[in-house]
Length: 144
Image (cartoon, rainbow, N blue to C red; front, side):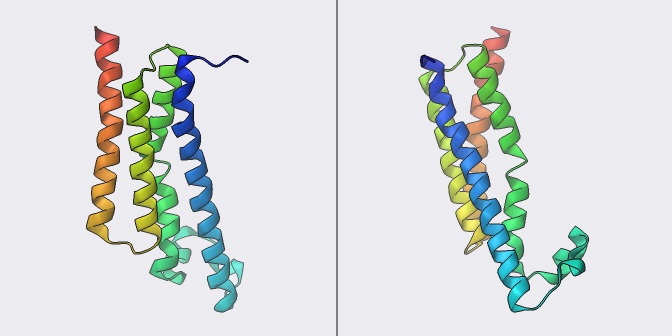
């Protein structure tokens, strides 16, 4: 298969998939370790509400971050695919996609480790701005 100019959008797209896998793995490592150390049987975690009651805040942060990775990133994935299919990928879209990925990585690192809320929020807003910029450009191109 021959590469096209639009293929550049797939590196940050795959990067988001890898980030999601990394957070998912981190979450389960933290959860299983916590359960083992505290001798918590899986049956005690039948519902998300019970898990919230049982897991410590630092263990719960990874699960919260994983949920975040199925919010705005869903729009990111859709935009990347739309841009590729419509031959709308250009260097500015690729830069914006990398910016979105970069800020999502930073957001996840903060959320899963030190969890400084305002720092996490700054990375979230910057990533969201890159995504909304991409969407605005798609809308302008569709109307124009």
